[in-house]
Image (cartoon, rainbow, N blue to C red; front, side, top):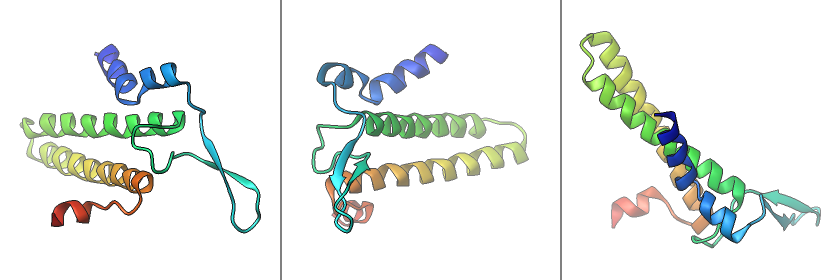
Length: 121
């Protein structure tokens, strides 16, 4: 089972893209105040490109969202009422937080993207 989870994380994080394209682990941009370069972990304005760190962290977030859904399913079929409530509420909260992080990364990448824009349309 661990091999399935690790292979899912490798595929989702863009490992194949990283091997073929060989992007840098992180980028740099000039700081406006000091004029010095500062490290950047998210490749802005390019949906089809990524830094290695960005892919690993986004893959981890997706992996953990999937794990939260699996815990939700496990908790839904639990016989003990207290354990069921704790698992369901905990997994829903964890999923919501991780989904929020994923949307915030997408917002940094695209610029101006918000989940509220998606809900309104």
